[in-house]
Amino acid sequence: MTAALAARPAEVLAGAAARARLAEAAASLAADDLVAYLGPGLIDGAPLPTTPEAVAAALHARAPAPSKIRTNMWSVAQFIEQRRHRRTLQGFMTEVFAAPLEPTDFHRFLAGLPLSLVVDTWYDGTFAAAFHAAGRGEAIELQGITRAGETRDIWTKAYDAAGAEVPLERADAAARVLYAPHGGVRPARNFLVSDADYVEALTEIDIQSPIPATVQRRRASRGFLFLGCRFHDQMLRTYARQIMKRSAGPHHAVVDAAGLSRNEALFLAAQGITPIDLPLADALAILMAP
Image (cartoon, rainbow, N blue to C red; front, side, top):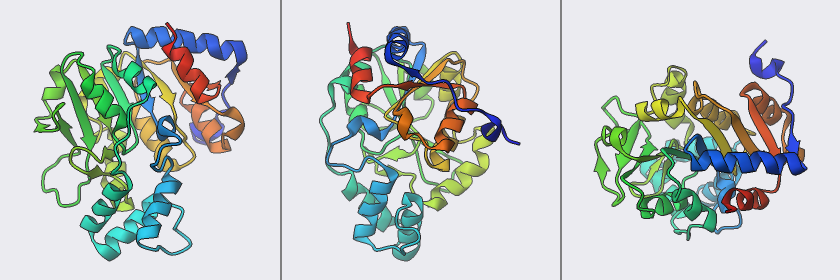
C-alpha cells in the first residue's frame, strides 16, 4: 500500500490556531525560511482562467475537443497539438493568457521579501512582474519548457529581469529565484500543458532531472507554504511532491477544508502538509500584517 493511500487525513487548523500558525509562517517568510508555492487562486476573479478546467474550456472554445476529454486541460491541449500543430497550441495558450494583470498587494508584498526561492505554478506571469520590479538584488526566473523541438538535454530556461534568456548558471548566484515549473506566457511563451509535454518529465521527475539544481539546493533547508493551490488532479500532486522533495519543512497549505477532495486530503497528509482552513483573503491579510 502506498503512503498516500495509507495516510490518514491531516489534522486541520482552523480559527485561532490557524491564525496563530499563519503569523508564525509570516515570520518564517520574512526570515527566508519558507518557499512560497503559488497557485492560480491568487488571481481569482481576474479575466483569466484560474483552474485547469477553465483552461480546457478556453482551448475547447478555439478547437472543439471530444466530449470525453473536454474538461481535462492536458488532454484537450494534446488533442490540439496532434490535430492542429504545436504552434497552434502555443498560439491559443498565448491568447488565453495574453492580458497582463496588475499585481495585487500581496504579490507586491511577497516580492518585497528577501526570499531566495518562490514557486509560481500558473501561466499568467503576474507575480513575475512584481518579482522583477522589487529591486532586491538580481532576480532570475526559471521556466519549465516543452521538449518538443528541442535537441538538447534541457528542461528549463532562465530569464533576467528584462526578459532576456541567460545561462542557467546565472541562477546559482542570484539573490532570488522564481521557479515556474509549467512555464509562463512571458517572456517567451513557454507552456507545459499537453500530455506529451509531460511524458519525458514524468519519466525522469522521480530522479529530479527536470527540477533545476538551484531549486533543489535552496529548498533543502526550507519548508513550503502553499497559497491559492488545489491538488485535485494527479499531475498537480506529482509536481508538488517532486518540487518539495527532500525539503526541510515544516509545510502548510491554506485551504478550504470542506472543499477538499479525498485525494487532496490524503496527499496533504502523506506529504506532511498541515492544512490551514481560512479564506484565502483572510490568510493573505495575516501574512501581510505589520
